Length: 406
Image (cartoon, rainbow, N blue to C red; front, side, top):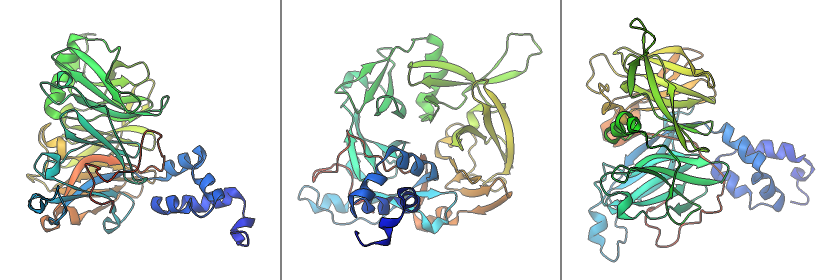
């Protein structure tokens, strides 16, 4: 490296070149020399890399069983199918989807088709191996962590998970949970040894109108501006008079003050058919209530809670198709992700389409819809991250999740 022409380049130029490499290549470049290692680990570089990363939807590909050793019993491994988790972005061709990890299906104690991926946040995937047992994995840096194991008293009646997010002030990944029987909200984080109670008010209306419906929809929120946002679950008529138009209401959780707040939702007539997403630093909402089109709303003014309907795109499903979601249960399999180039990917296993909102063009993602490929769309969105968190570590020999990173 002493005689290399790269030595004569300014560090800003080297950083700009390295930014254009794939994530795995950037990690390898840190082994070239100390200067490159320093460049690729600075907060400025990592932030710039995060901005360039397109949002992708996660796709499960079911693979043939392989004779992996399973506690000395090969029959157990032959009875399972491996699941490959791929990231499919709106800006890349479908054949260029990124293979993240490969993990066993039945070793998670559930049928393989159920999957145990709960959520994705800031480049980290949250897996649930068992009740109260959560694993975190960054497939780009190949590191993992485990949340404190929950005692049975915290997750006695139902799955307690309501939101997974990265808490910027503390540098912790946190899981927001609720125990209905105990009437408490609590947080499990990577920087603690046991759950911590929050200061969230135990408003009866919160339990009735927000918590109870989420028990049936299992909807994970969208994180933006330090808040978690759940899609609207109800409409109400303002008390300003009988002629007042109904409004949609949605719930948000301030991750700093740890309080719930109600906020206005998009002007949808079918709030339970709305899917939230983040695009270009804005909170977006896709309304799937109509048969032939999808309305795309954006929260233009976050402080004033002003929504506007910017786009109307053709429905990704054929007219009269049985694959189109018709209730809140059907929304569980719907995926949506956008990037900074006005590309947005929408749909599920029965219809997946990439729209370019600026050029008003569209293309179908056919590989997912072909059952012979055994690929299925998840509802989760992923943005790769090169950040190496202090609480994460490389997987050990007895790591209970991953067979292979590719």
